[in-house]
Every structure is written in C-alpha cells, then in structure tokens.
Image 1: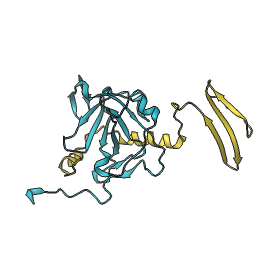
Image 2: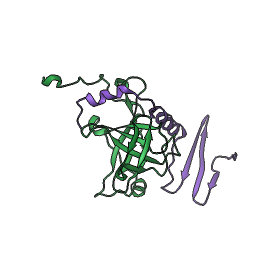
Image 3: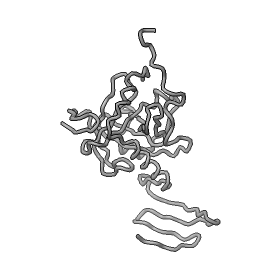
Image 4: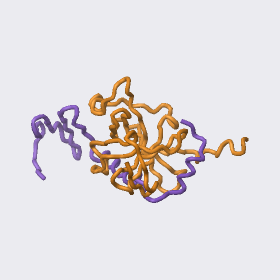
Length: 77
Length: 152
C-alpha cells in the first residue's frame, strides 16, 4: 500500500485518467474531488462495505423451512 | 446443467435460467454465475442460486409488488454494460435478508439486482439515492393474513 501526504490543492494521479484533488481540510473533514472515467464506479467506503455485509447476511444456506410461508401468502405480482 | 444447492438439493437448470455477473456481487466477488429460480409463477419471490457454491442462495423480491413508487435511474454506463435497450428493459429485483423470522424480512432498496434476460447478464447496482435503505422492512405491519382461506 502506498501512503502519500498532500496539501490542499495538491493532486494524486492514478493511472492515466483518474485525478484526486484535495480541495479543503476543516478539522476532521477532508473534501476531495475525483475525476475519473464514467465507467469507474466511486462509492463511499462505508456504503460499499454495508452492502457487502448485508449480502453476506442475506446469503441463506440452511434450509429455512419457514420460507415456505411465502408460498401461502396471497401477494400477487 | 445440474447444480448443487444446499437449499434446493440437486437442481436441473436450463440455459435461460443462468445469469453471468461479471463483477460478482459485493461481499462475493468470486461468484460470477447464478441460476434464477422461480418460487412460484404468481409469487413476487424468487431465488438466485450460485452455480458453484451450493451454500449460496439469495432470496429475491419483486420490488413493485411491495413498493409501487420504487424507482431509480440506471446509469448509462451500467445500461450499456448490461446491453439494455428500450426493447429489452431491465428486470429489477431486491435482495432480501431473513435474520430469524420471515415476518422480519428486510430488503435492500439501495442496491437492486438488475438482470438482462436476453443476454443473461446481471449486476447488483449501488444507487446514489440516500433515501433508500439497505435493510428496509418488507412487512412493517407483520405478515399479511393468509387470505381467502376456505374461500372466505
């Protein structure tokens, strides 16, 4: 892993087409802009982590016979 | 094709049921192939079963059966990647989580699963809509009554 120290206004260039700029620092909050091709998806780390964690919880392996209740529910598409 | 499922046992699936997820699914980046399994023709519930990991099954929910206002804009890049078009609209599902009881089931509104049934590509899309929760209760008022029992 690479760790870099940057000042406000300084940039980090990743590959040929991603530029991260530090815009401002106020206390604990660092604001940055990211210029990247549209196909590069950018997420706040905690949101991606939360979705991965929810998916791991959603993965059902054991036979939840209780799920058969779903069949008896009169919910129509 | 035969696949193994802890939930369903040995399953025979046809090509039309097999979907490729080129990016895997968050939390399961290595899982790139799933079979889409209907619960029942009329049911808003269905399943995604990994074709390689018998233990991995997701419960899918048709969002529009429960949230008629559910909507989002699919990024052009994602639409292109999945080869969506007006003639070939995406099919949208929510992944459900059942922690203990079915009545407490939650769905992930923020990260719907989008399927293209023609070229059989799929992806879990992460939306930028902060008002959508990743664990939204599906039955906030408890399970619906088992209606029309005995024709009443």
